[in-house]
Image (cartoon, rainbow, N blue to C red; front, side):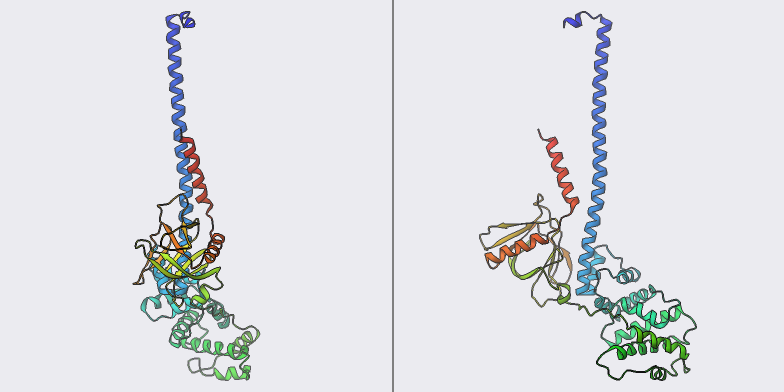
Length: 392
C-alpha cells in the first residue's frame, strides 16, 4: 500500500488501466485456447469418425460376402439393406465381377438363375468383359475364370448364350451368327475336357475337331486356320477353371480355429439356447444345427474383450463385451426365423461351456482371435486424457 501512496492520482489510474487490459488479454488468450482446443478436437473426431465408418463398412461387406457364399440371394439382400449395394443390375454385376471375397461357385449359381432380375445382372456382368480382338479361346479363358459354371444345363445354356452374344458384339464379322459362336464355344469346352482329362483315353485330333464343326457357320464351314489355332491353344494350355470350392460350410468354415456346442444366453429374452459355435476369421459364428447352411448369428471380435463370469444358473461361463462401454450394443448380426438378417441386440454375450476345461480352451482361442482397431484405442486414450485434465 505504501508504494501506491507514492503514486499520483493519474499514475494510479494508469496502473488500474494496465491491470484491466492485462486481465482482458488473459481472458482473450484463454478464450482463444478454448476455441483452438474445440477446433482441434472437431478435426480429430472428424478423422476418427470417417475412419471408424470406413472400418465398419468393411466389416459389413465382409459379413455380406460370407452370407453370399452361403446363400447368394440372402447375401445380396443383406448388402442392399445395409446400403452397401444399390438394388440395380449394374451395381450388383460390378460387385460380382470384382469378386473380392466371393465364392466363384456362388457367383455362377446367382448368374444362372432364370428370374428376370438375375438375367439383367447376367447381361450387365457379361458386358463388363472386354473381348475385342481376342480369339474365342482367349475370351473363354477370361470369361470362365470370373465364375464357376453351374452344374444345371439350363443355367449353362443361358450363360453361354450371353457370352456368345457379347463376343460377337465385340468382334463383328468373325462369325455369321451368335449361334455359331455358341456351338463352337461348347465344342472348345468339350475339347478341353477330352484333351486334358486323364480318364479320356481317346484324344481327338485336329482333323476330328475340324470335322465335328463343319457346317456350323450358318450352314457354311469356318476357316480351317481358325479351328486349328483354337485346337492348338487348348492343346498347349488347358482352361484354368476355378476350383469347385463349394457353397456350404465345408468351404466357408474350412479349418476353423475352434468349433463345438455351447449354451448362449439370449439378448432380449434371457433364455439359454444350445448352439454350434465356429471360431474363424476373427469372427464367432453360431448355428442352430451343425447341418445348417448358414449361421444364425455372426459376432465380429474386433475390439471386444472376454472374461470369466459366475452365473447362478449355468456353470463354466464367460462373456464377450465392449471394454469401457457396458451399455453399448455389440456390432453383430443374426438371422430371424423368417430369414431376415438384422442387427444383434446384445450389450454382452454370455456363453456357457460344457466343462471347465473347454471353457478355458474357448477363452484362450477367442483371445488369440480378437483383433484391435487402433483408432478405437486412440479415442479411449484421448477420453482418459481429457478426463484427467478436467478432474479436480
